[in-house]
Amino acid sequence: MTTDHAAPVVSETDAIHTHFGLSYATHLVMPRTILQSMPDWWQQDFVRLLHLYDHACSGLPENMQDVNYRVQTGEWREPWQVDDDTLKRLGWSYGDEDDTDATADPQDEEDPDEPLRTVIYDPEGNEHSIDTDCVFVPNREDPIPYYWRGRTRLPLAPISRTDVSATEDDA
Figure 1 (tube, helix red, strand yellow):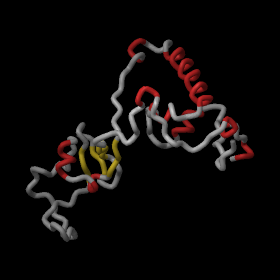
Figure 2 (cartoon, rainbow, N blue to C red; figure 1 turned 90 degrees about the vertical axis):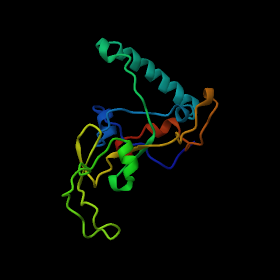
Figure 3 (tube, rainbow, N blue to C red; figure 1 turned 45 degrees about the horizontal axis):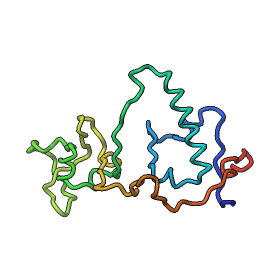
Figure 4 (cartoon, rainbow, N blue to C red; figure 1 turned 135 degrees about the vertical axis):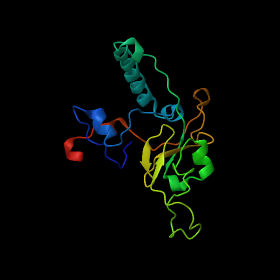
């Protein structure tokens, strides 16, 4: 089986750092339903690597082992894309709620008395520009189907073992 895409060249050093690029991501989350939808050979290789990962992590200090996380699906949005009630429920604030002298935005045709807002504060009090996707709005339900004891399979693009054997000439 062949595919019409070339796998990226994988660096011999810093491959994980290179994969994440400039994303600022500190964790990798992979839905179980998608993992179990991969070809059997891929799942076997992946599980072998997970066993190696677990063994390597056993050398970490005890306070770094068996750390648990909560994963939530959702979307990153700019503050202006989120209604005020949702922002408030999520703990976000423009910081001008009690400011009667807030500068009004005369350009706002819907409500010219609405304050001109350039920053917003997250639940921890950190300031963010309103022009960035900084507000995480959780989904009501996960768009990825439940794994259902290994029975759920999703239609993925076909892959083969040769897809990961690209050389510098392929890039």
